[in-house]
Length: 127
Image (cartoon, rainbow, N blue to C red; front, side):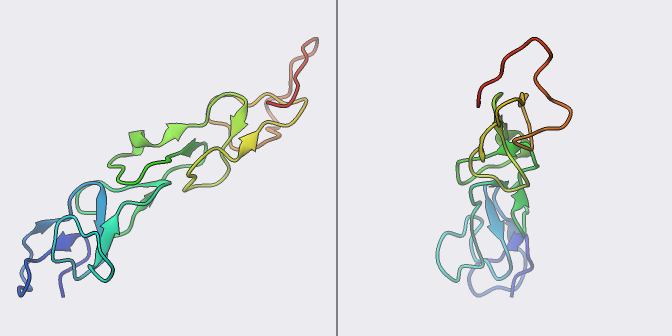
């Protein structure tokens, strides 16, 4: 069986090359871009990115999201927009709007960020 992160041509146990960027090869892949059930990998899922040679999809970091399959680098994970928050990792979309009384800057990871209260004299409605 071919090693994780690599693919081996059908019938060979010798590494042919690295798994293609945008895909992951979990082991036993016979193609650089496996896309079928039992192929030893698949297209990189939403909320992740997969550079060349990926064995396990890499999660987009907290404060970001990725709504597309086949991402190839961390910069494909988009920062959560102002007024929205993205908790945890592997987000496929923002989790929601910031709560009333709070300001969510770009890349916020909580609906009620403790360091981002609405400044005195300002008004903040949800979002």
